[in-house]
Figure 1 (spheres, rainbow, N blue to C red):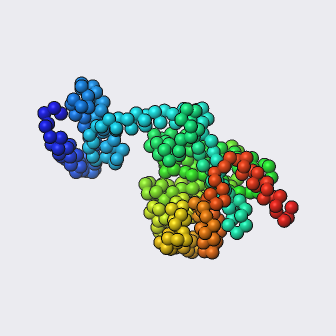
Figure 2: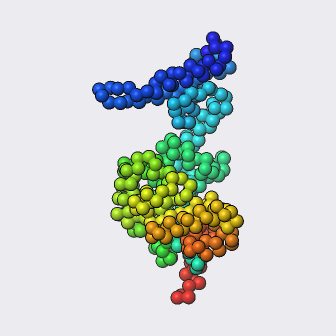
Figure 3: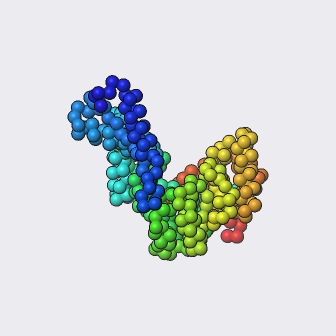
Length: 346
């Protein structure tokens, strides 16, 4: 790259290469498309020798791919640091699964009118032995991109089923266990078999398990995912649309998919009742659920005002800090026992 006094010319050349490869090729009357991702390193600032320059150009290329491909990227030290951090994170995720560093907490889902727990959502936490607690917002996207989310998801599913079975064996009130499922997990050819195996392994009837699926998971491979969802529903597993209203909300897909429940995203709940637009959207979603005869739950309920608004507009099921933060299984068990003791039938 030494001969280029102006890096703009380098960028222009890279873009021309990308554009030249963009049109489809015809091979035996079949249309094939090839897209290019280009990484660029510059001598001498990005390396003193060809080996270092190629390594750094490769790093820049993967950055271009990570941003969707069909692009070019110049190497930077910040980029190199991000790649090294990502490699370390991927390695630590594999070790975390082997060394049982993950734990599940459970956030109550309650009937707003009675305050009784009707379900819980299983939420994963990672306690790293040196770094302490690592946020799911940090490690879940990395796990999805690397594919280790499948192993982590299997662990979550089995732990959630095991815990639900334990509560039932203790004679505690029945509840639904909600487990988040990523789009990566859904695309596994044997995903339904994995779910049914977890239920069978712990002797848990399918109706106690609810899989939460975000709208964005339905965008790719839609027909195949619809088949998977229908198969799960036929087996008795409950299905919930997570974060409803934030993605590609469509009555067309909602009425044709076997969902049991709509979950109103907390971004709308956070603004009620003060923000008129959030209040209006929340009312619309409540109306959609009622029209489609689907269950409804609002997540992120934190204040008395939000709780009152939802009750007034006939949203019975709620979840959020107002009712309890994610907590260990033992605390959920204690609350379930207290509800039994407080019951007038006892």
